[in-house]
Each structure stands twice: as structure tokens, then as C-alpha cells.
Image (cartoon, rainbow, N blue to C red; front, side, top):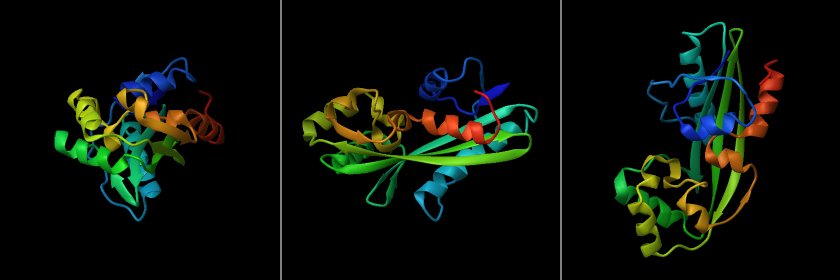
Length: 185
């Protein structure tokens, strides 16, 4: 059995594109807050999620993922309310940032990891446009205060890399990682 260690409906929807049958078991552990660099932080949290769930399902394959937004070397997590969302989006307006997802697959007592990085370029957004988007409530539970598949799509000028990474589960990288772990999705 394959288990996705996430309660994210976006990750579930993406995994359905490459894996016909799997279960959802969200991980309720506190995430790691610091690491020596953003990629290592994303991988550490993906491992934490997958390994925590795998303790209860040692015979199964467990997939963990953690997605972060990085702007000018600073990690943008989920915003602290509407004001925090506005401030993040204001900083991202007209600029380039990175979305990094750490992946972990636990199978047979071993953990396999990988990362994927995608560059996202936002066009300029007015304060009014940002406020209107924040008022929808969508950015309040998203890293970087936005969702590629949501209302900010109108402000994203271009992306370089895997779009599914920006949504939260890089399918191509996950498929390669599964192959290297001997897992058939």
C-alpha cells in the first residue's frame, strides 16, 4: 500500500495523476523550523512527515513532501494573518522567487529523498489587487501566501520548471525518486 503523509487536497489531487491507489494519513508532528539552507529544510520536513507516519505502517510505502517559498534567501512560510499575506505578496510583486519541495519516500526501512526547485516570476501587483486577493482568504494557509492554481494565476508572468512543484508535489521528480527506491506508483 502507498500512503501519502499529507492532508493537502492539492497533493492528493496531484498524486492521483500518477498513482491509482493510495491512502491519506496526515502527519500531525511539528515541523522543523531551521536548517543550514532551504533545500535541506524542505527535505528534513519531508523526511520527518514520511518517517513519522511510516512508524505506524512499516510494511507500506510512505511519501512525504514539504514545499517552501524562498525570496532573496528568506523562507516565506504560511502568513501570519491577512497583514502578513499582504506583506509577503507586496515583496513578491514584480520579482522572481523560488519554490522548493523536499520529497521523502520510506520503504523497507529506508528513506529516499530528493528536491525540486521552480522559479516563479510575479508581475507587478497594485496594493488594491493584493488586498482583493487576500480578502478571498485563499492565501492564508499557503506558503508564500499564494496558490498557482488559484487567484494569483493572473499575476504570475512565467515559471521556469515544474508547475506541479509550485502546487506542492513535483510529479516528475517523485516518479524518478520512486523508481530509484524500487517503488512502482
